[in-house]
Image 1: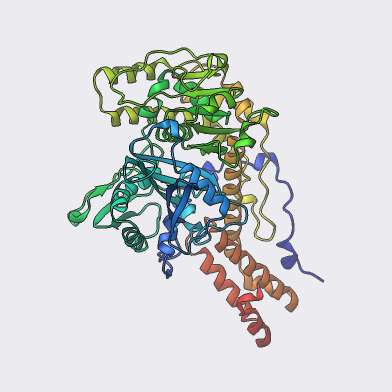
Image 2: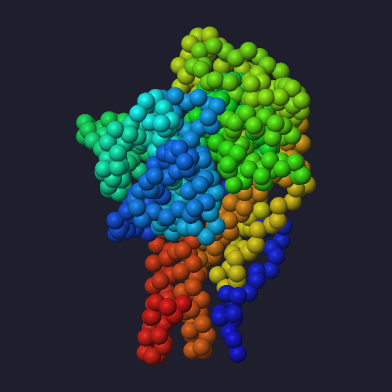
Length: 600
């Protein structure tokens, strides 16, 4: 006969009454990072492990008269890339010939990781992702390529030009950091070749791992960089400035940000449409950015993706996309609606190929934002014939929200008064942040109400379930607790929410929130178990039932450690102590079996 204790862990908790469900804002506060059981120590690392925590590899892409673009060097030499990945890197590392990029150019691209290929040190980096903001988590299924391209006249070469790119391949979206790193190492590499690259890689392999929240000091070829990777516990919109210390006499570069692009400079050519662009990105609409160079294309796409921060953009985006891309046919077909993706392109061919796309942004040359862009009406798509068409936004989209004239006037005034570009960027970033927060807070408040009451959690029953998301129920909450509480903007907020709830951005956001809340319920269930007098409980158990209980507890402990559940300090050691004390009540032969690590 199975006792109540042993089968209880498998029982499903009966559906609690609706009156029991309350917001966890009061019942289950979570403030700041979960306390660690003990100070985390960096695991012992093998050669190239530290390098792999920052980069997958470094590639040198050159131009061969017979072969075209070709990967000349991959470093470290043991790094693995499939032939498809190498082909993608080759074509994406060079500007289109029409871009006319003489001199040095920097830009970035993003491409799919080939099926079955593995990135370096994937499992090892999982615990860094836990504390990173959603926009800085490693990109599952994609690589970023950070490019330093040099094209200079060279009469000694048949082609008449020296053309080569140094490319950093990484899972990390630290665009500002990697571009800063390339500025340091690429010019030197073009002069000194592979021995310099090998020395630079050895320096990187001595760096600390990219841990969010820590001040990191990174020496590279005689120069020292200092930076801080943000955490998910930082207050949105604030950046903890890296302060210079007396011991920093060797620090050459202090980076204020690892990932943010200059929003004001990027949006300057389409300045009067920033609010509409925010809506298009929020709703995961198909967008193409047509720009004169990969640098302007990639910066603009990254600015679009970041304008809905702290929400994560959950659709695909390609800062620089070419006709050679493996997804070219998939993304340009006219047999179905354009996919939910943001593309950055420079080839004039796309003006015809993507003419059927609903929203097209044409970017001119990004000069210093010293003068204000002239006010431009939204243009009709039929007027977009070539890539030489005038800068502007070509779309038939009608925004849900009324235009905010105040932000336009504030930034216009800044231009007239020659306000520093950094200040203009900060104003625009704050505007987007407040707009996104006004939109997301009602959703956060409603989703929090789907949590069950903490006292409904029983240690001997499975954790209670979350209530399902009910769209109409959520819409009713907007009457009294909608965005009007924090935003002065008028318009069809209800229509904007309805459209958003059908988008990949909502799906990605809700999946993440649901996972967090399920883990919180598991953590509370574990804490409730630890508070039980298990010795008293097992007195009513048979030997078989006690063994069964030990196995279940060990399984829960293993899962909790694997999922890094947000439990109170001391919970996991306490559970381990409970397990040990129960094992000691059993015969010696069973104790030996249960102490084996694989018995769970």
